[in-house]
Length: 178
Image 1 (cartoon, rainbow, N blue to C red):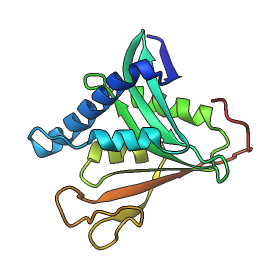
Image 2: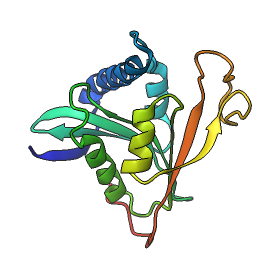
Image 3: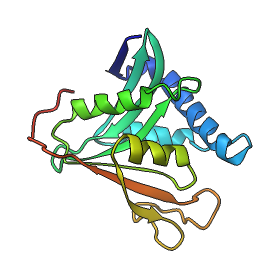
Image 4: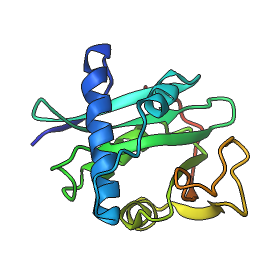
């Protein structure tokens, strides 16, 4: 199967959002044991419409199997992975790693990548730390709030998040291959 990471076309946006929500919901369901709706459409829209946002779809043999939304800051070279998902039914096949490798190749000028994931999502924590080389650097919760968030972590909607960073070794300041 041929893997490609392509910029998201507007014609694919609705399917991209639906697949992302389903993947996040299935992940949460695997931990809670009940059907969950954990990724509001508004959160996806906010990430897609943010300044510096770029969305990618992962394709295998003409099928969209995942994707990512990144936020690129060319001035600081400190970039953020807002969302990365693998479509339900395609997990465990190395697609997430291929998506990440494609992103790293597209942005070789990056000095630091940052992302977050919920504290309970052991699969994501394993993926970011053990597969991609990120390090947990902060834990946002009711005692230590994310300064960028307006909601509190005391309620069920904000269970606590790990913030991860990946410092890119040997960055030569190369130009983006967007």
